[in-house]
Image (cartoon, helix red, strand yellow):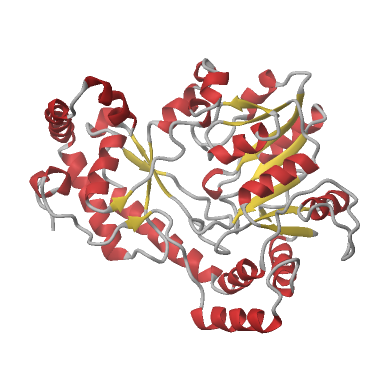
Length: 420
């Protein structure tokens, strides 16, 4: 147990954890049931091309959400790209910069200009009040991102989209199993996408999906995910790509669906344990979830107020990583400060003040079935100790970095070190 800052690994102590604790280590369902399904798949010798497990998985997800169509795909990024193309978006599309870069890339990949909009600092989601001023004659759509599984202001976005005749797509990569006003995410806009990547609380090993209530849109998406083939003959009737989910991913998803309530229960308990630990640490606030809604509690997200804690968010990341706690900075530094967007829009930060502030404050911690009360208590002990001695830690970490600089070698190597 660490009782002084000299015990911290970043200052020479021993790491608290022998093995790394990841923010999103995969949750795994019943292994026996998974292996039964794998053996059945191998016996069938049907590994891809809309097999029985993919069909069952799509139906189960559609039923769970309460939508007419679920189209399972190979990953969430391809789901975004196909949804954008199926909705015939072009010109400019408005979206937040505070999102995973795939949301912007899916547009830029298709030569559509992403127009970055600021966020509401309370919700971390796109601010409807900022959208109207960004609409131009070239605007064809809006992408709302349901960050941390918490819905953005869906009603406001629907009104804006309807008033300006814009398509409305939701990136719900974080939102599987969550609801808004009692209605499951996946039910809104023209379509929504999910990610089932292993870092998500629910995974299909690798995968994603588009969900919609639009029959015509669903038919188009099914053609697009499979090269535009119609039926089992060589009849190509539409332009398409290879976005299909395979049978292994689908059966993994079916197995994990059977444990989804357990995954959510563990996440919820972890969330409350963290909240209790952080309740009285000045300068640290943990995002909350609406207990009246369904949530997956997938993310433990802190905002660090450096003016109070003394130690910065980035220094806390350094401290935790030395202890083998692989804390993450989401979504640092914001899409508008990544390439190619920082070159295309060098002054975007002028209209994204809240995004820039939040990107400097957010810290995400490990949760899921890979951690429990003991791990959480130790993580919080490390943070509490660091913040209690925040200004001293800030100085000592800064001094340590300064002492390392003479050993860097040629001055030309310094930019590479600072960017690492």
